[in-house]
Length: 171
Image (tube, rainbow, N blue to C red; front, side):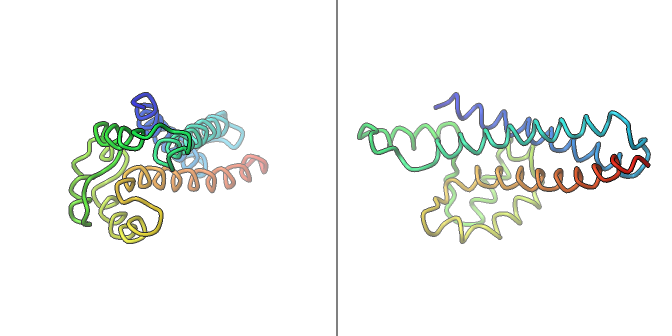
């Protein structure tokens, strides 16, 4: 399991970086400081495509790691998985919004992807929904990271559409 954990965090960081690069290049391109047929358009598209590929991989691995235990698993698998997730700091232990916020803000990895304000807003907005139903409150860290990457992906896709129109117009 640590291999998957490492993959999730490394890929999340790389995906975040690629989305940020794509967004930055698209924004510069759309300010018309760069000629319409410049190679930066293709560069930004490639950053976005690679970031999305990593995001989809992270999502698949997170579901496998945090989802329901397969029915054919040995009896002690659930306990072992829970222990491994906690030891590798994939899940959080806080039970109140303040405990979660403090734990997430202290997490070095979360700090690379989100600001303190973004973490605080996320916990306030999603605490109730994450702690009810089939969702587990302990998984809020991974869900928060996935949601942050999804938001960047959506922004990148919006900019790609605008850039594509400019590229096709050739002005």
